[in-house]
Length: 115
Length: 116
Image 1 (cartoon, chains in turn cyan, green):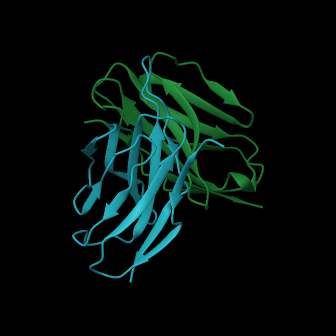
Image 2 (spheres, rainbow over the protein chains, first blue to last red):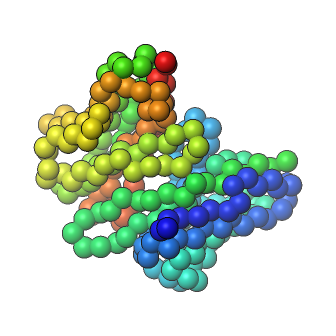
């Protein structure tokens, strides 16, 4: 089945620890995105990548880092510099074709809680 | 500046009622795309529809319909004969062909509660 997988579904972290959230897609999409969602809020863009080995900061990149070494994978690291990391994290991907702007497809999300 | 406004934070209706979710957008671009997504309690966002700025035809898909009006910069979503399974948060989003660089500008979402 084609789709986007995120792991783990739930993640608990102690303050001061870095933690990495996994995102994998087998849709052969060029672009991948990381969003943060706080309770009762909309989506805020953390980072996005349109091609391997290249990525751009979104609106709230501080305290986060990413890599894009493979087309299928876009892991997000939440560093200790992120002061309020407890949130729901969503990964998405989309094709980048000519002729239009395509919808983003989302993974099931990772719920991160800092203890 | 470009933005998407979903003024209804929460809507609650009884099953079988019709309900309309409003979406108003602002854009600098003449070519743009509008989207609706559904986020059920499980959390994963589900794509519902994409519309480009040159196609103002209304769209109907089963109980769902969308009314795109450029004159009022609105892209409203109507659910006819609502069902409990329609309970979710619904997001409207905008992508501009020139300015957005493939990013989506998201509304804050409308939480829809369908009571049995």
